[in-house]
Length: 251
Length: 227
Length: 77
Image (cartoon, rainbow over all chains, first blue to last red; front, top):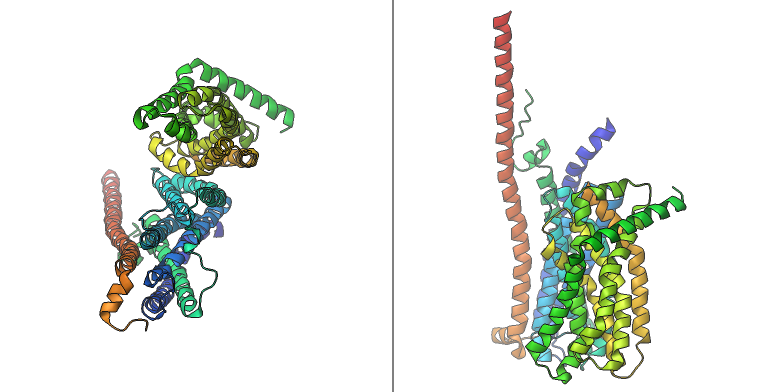
């Protein structure tokens, strides 16, 4: 009886749990990101070297951090999906990958725009930008594989294997790109990283990082809820959630 | 199952794979011709001066090698999947990762090794200075097993799709980047007169890591694909 | 406040274009992701309606078959 009931209850329970979290996550994300960005844009003092252009850091650094964090999260979900065969973890891959890809794009774009005034070019083969670009390709690969199969279950498992292969490779790629960059380097490497940051800049940056953490979590939660509904659409509870009274042929 | 029978199954499987591949020689030869043609195109595109060609030679040869690995990847599992022998392989009383390693080795013998032998010709055409030929061949010798192993992972993941070509390159090429970087750097350091020892050892380490982990991923991917 | 006027905020010491471009595109990208999530939800609701109609059709047919078989049973007995 329980063995039969368990997998049916799981999707619904997860859906409700995520639904309870979502308002808190999105609320915190909205507040913290707004505070961090407004503070960083208007109240933080200009940098003595880069002037006001450094303000891009308040988006660039958090987005870069969680673009990589999301990949790690996706790989953990993939491991759970493969080892314990938990379907919610399979769906989590599909929920995390687009969010991670968008964060990677944001990090990439802000990095390139920041590079224009600093390096005088829209694209510089800087180690950080290059590894973000490769990360974007990895995300797109996982997404493409996930949706390539007619059978959703096969696609999810294949994508899970690919994300695990990817997560083994990410540190190697990261290291090799940094090493490659140090070989072909001009004098640009220290432009982004600073030895120390005064607290007037550091505090809004930390707030923004915390805000992006909640933003990432909220976005993933939203997409995971959608994914659960999509996969469980034929079940009465899912139809009720979508505002339709289920009629399961029960007289 | 004991080791002796696993070994026997593995040997049979590898001999069969070799025989099948050698009977369809065009599958083996075409990727090599592809490399040769790509190498020929570059002097026509950028001009035949040795100063440009010698500088880009390593990169061109390695990129051509990566692309030809993708080209020859269908051979790995496609036919076995279509005629059902892949399913039989899963059911064999031998660990699937070991069989996957056997497949990778056979694939390397027919794609990686010929490429190593072809490398001097490519180097000649691209006017790579002679002192770097040895390093180029060494990097290919150490790097192509990795290429075969990673290709096997991608091919096993996409084998049930049928139209996996473009998807496969999207999945695999980003993962080839460390290989490309270290191989090119090894040849580069020979060209400037320093030792390539460090890069080659690094490549060898990566190769061992890949050959250890890739068969596990291939086995998992085959199980997903045949079910 | 690091700025004294709106002009200064927009101008940003000459870097305004880059700063506002990167902030704008980033917010747009995340916004599009949110909107896409909401649209998916709407699509799902539409699919749920179709699913409901399908289930109702199935139920009706089953009922018809049941009543038909019942009536044939009645006539034969």
